[in-house]
Image (cartoon, rainbow, N blue to C red):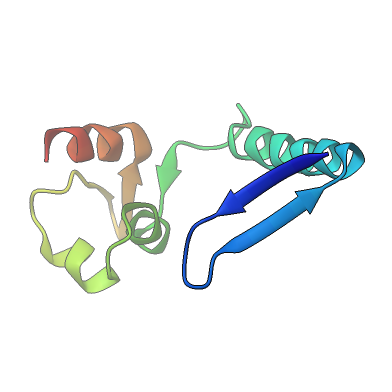
Length: 89
C-alpha cells in the first residue's frame, strides 16, 4: 500500500491501493501528454495568455512590457516569448 500524509489545516491522510496509484498515474500522464501535444499552437489569445500568466486581462492589456503581436484586429501572444518574459522578470 502507498501511504501519503499531507500537511495542511487538520492534516490529510491518504491511503491508496497499488491499482489506484496506477490509475492515477495513467490519468496524469494522459493529461500531460494532451497539453504537450505537438500539434498544439504556440499562439494564445488575450484571454488564454492572461490565464497562462495568472494575470487579470486588464493587467495583461495595460502592461507594455509583455511581448505581444498584432495582426490587424487580432492580438496574439507567443507562449515561448511569454516563458522568456517570466524568466527575465
